[in-house]
Image (cartoon, rainbow, N blue to C red):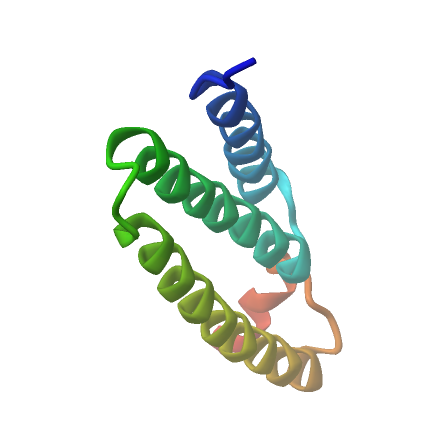
Length: 103
């Protein structure tokens, strides 16, 4: 049985939708970061799937996914450092508590 693109794209679409929903509705910076990572992983799946089905003999999609994972890891490390500094200043990681840092 040959798997079609839909078997991979539908879970990727669900992951991306969950990430967008979490990014919009969450008030905690850590939860927002997790939602952003969920969206980035969904895009990585799409890179690999489109490469696999459109250009089966080439590896560009795999390399794009590896670079995207490396960039996401660096972005996560930087974001967690920022969240830790915000927590030290405000003692809270909710977005509504960040308005205190303006003044």
